[in-house]
Image 1 (tube, rainbow, N blue to C red):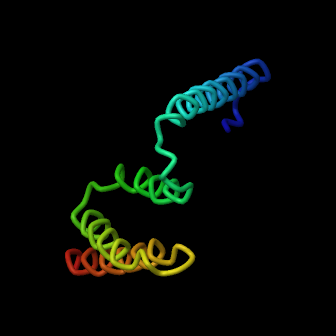
Image 2: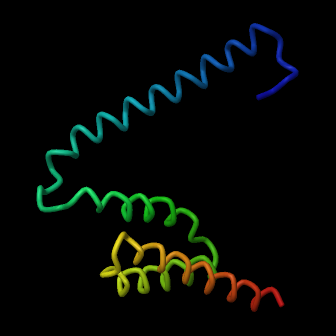
Image 3: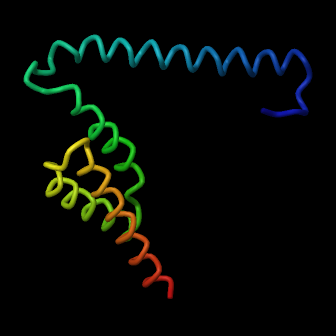
Length: 109
């Protein structure tokens, strides 16, 4: 938050920020209401966590280490998907992080 704003500018700043957050919230709730009936009943609620994870990861795939980490993590996560308590996703993420870090260190050395 900018501290050098006068009172009127500060109120305007927070009004615009709040209106933006509310508008985006309303848009995504509407999208969820429209997409909800399209999602098959056979899909368990647990599919949301991997879908969210993919949505967070895909925009960051701009370097070779990041791409390698995502690919290795996806393969390991899929292979370990039978683990209980969603540990397959966690295992894939951790292995992907290690591989990405090793490749980044090797390319920077």
